[in-house]
Length: 265
Image (cartoon, rainbow, N blue to C red):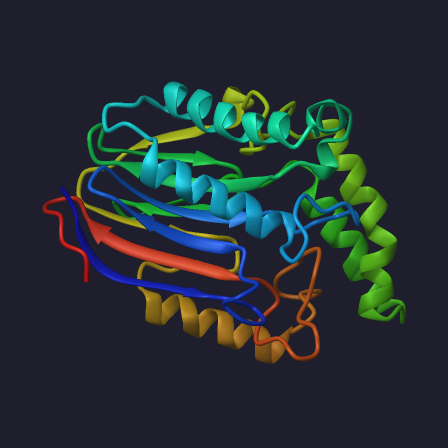
């Protein structure tokens, strides 16, 4: 049982294209971060691969996930759910060969039955006042390269274009091989973090560069980052910065709850 204290989802551009979500069911609380597409391939016209991945995983948690699931059975179940979509669309063989084109997302999920937080991919959590993250191994190196390019005078859009081959190589070489994500293929279980929870939990996507234990504090640190370093090349290094017309550099989702009783605000 849980008590939801506060929550927020906001798209970097708008909610129609937002790739992040919060899921609340009687048995699970989750944040989902659909991965930004790194190629031009799209599974569905009119929606990004990241938004589709988020929507599919949200549907799985709401409709299919069983209360007594373990982390292992959850990963098997959500993997099978997405894999079946590849089969129906006749894209399975292509997805086997091109992990950079898969429907991919990171998930941080709390199991009410198990009283555990499961971190699959690079979402964040604060569990009983302890901070946890699950960053991709190559992300810091690629972000540092982008920062270097921009400091050398390369335009941010061009710097992003120049690092995209590095991002694709990282996915091909590491996705569910050296780091875990949900993508319709077996999850790299050594890259999954399981955390027992006893009192209070914050789950968030990586749209918050400096996660804090309250929504107000997390929003304030984000606002400071956007004011002082909007391209994320100084105080916080990232593979993308804010684009013209957007309110932030990434979509974001935040939920804080206590693990005492269940109540949805």
